[in-house]
Length: 120
Image 1 (tube, rainbow, N blue to C red):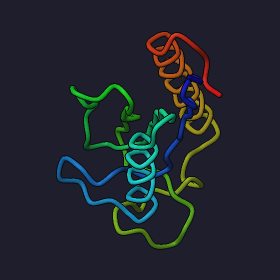
Image 2 (cartoon, rainbow, N blue to C red):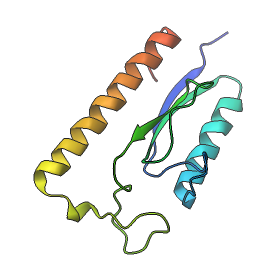
Image 3 (cartoon, rainbow, N blue to C red):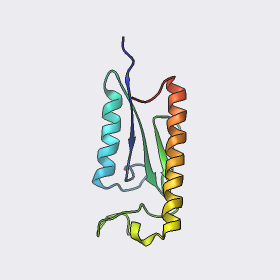
């Protein structure tokens, strides 16, 4: 039997859990994550941002990218954030991007170690 497909999703909005409202893209990401993990021959890991939520204790396939501020957005209206990317100065943006990159890479490494192979 072939190894399952191992995939990774980076979410741009929070999931609707732990009492936090989620926009459509967050709900879609969570639904895709669950759907892929219910399919035979597929394993999906995901990470998404939130200043409210915590990492799950019972599911190692997803992780929260913890924020101390609202989720950065570009659009003019959001139901759960008014924090704009353009409000960050260059130093803050570079620090955010580096922390995101580091957390994603660490989570990828942890997942690959758990699975005994690299992502497809």
